[in-house]
Image (tube, rainbow, N blue to C red; front, side):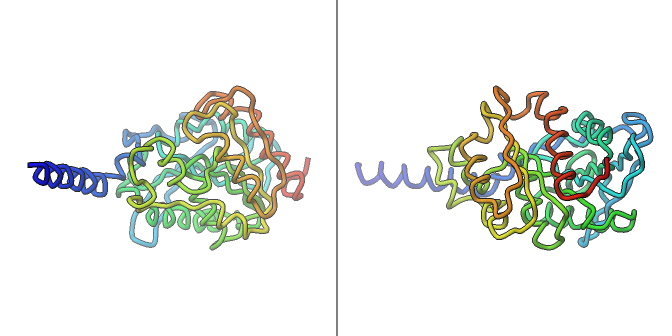
Length: 273
């Protein structure tokens, strides 16, 4: 009977792990697939643009022009694992006030876009965003990649394929498994996880000036993980720690973060003031 009980427990554990392997992406991606309003109805002068991916998807995005003097500098905003581009409108408005155009992208499966998110899929979406910016007159060497949370893994990979002028990593992690292992301590996350999103590896080898921003009360990505990324970055320009800030607090989408982007642009000579 003891052997049968052991075999039963093993079979149950195997079935549970099988379910987690199959449905793990439901624990990673939380897209808001509801329709997104027209860009101009949310941000004056903004317009809807389409990103065409190499695997045949048409993804909706917003291009937000600067409110100050016209600039050739643009921020490519790679969001985190939830919501949609409308949720980032406030930060886009702060950035445009500082002289940047902003491309607010939504990944496949987010914001009414077709497809389902995966690591490879998000990489293709980011490539499509770079291509669209080039067609709109914004080459990579006039672009700052802004990665938010999961988006830090997206831009860490992207900068290897298309080198930007600068990078901002907001609430980064060394790799996604580190966050999963923190929240699901009872699971063999590092063995199960298919979408890895490494950040420290690509960024340690990068010569692109990089700013790391995080809150010291982050309950989603532990601050110690973001600090580890800052120590590993090959060309760290600044480390900005927002006191008392949690992962999705308003301050994380506000002027302090926009100022960090502007300081990086000043440092690398991207925006004239």
